[in-house]
Image (tube, rainbow, N blue to C red):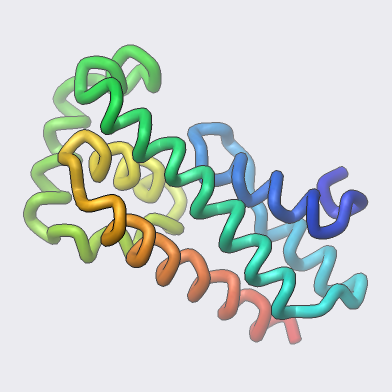
Length: 141
């Protein structure tokens, strides 16, 4: 479905995959690579979409704080406190791992809750997510 929409589908699937929705964008990337879409535009589009979705999570964390995220995302307080502790332990550099399934989305919420600099957020999340798409593209070649 997403792959049929080309680069627009790549953007949307990557954007949605970065939210709490249980979607992945790797299959779309691979489908488009095998359909001979150019690699560089695919990586840029996938990265932009995925960072955009992460920015939504960041904004929600910033705007609604811990209590709001517990309500919106149905995350128990003890899990959020644990995630905050881990984030504080590793610092903003943990945002380079925002692409990792299961832990990536909570990291982006926590960054907003803790009011991490938006500039650092974008730089580190982009670095991590772009690296993932580059590696996947190279492995597929």
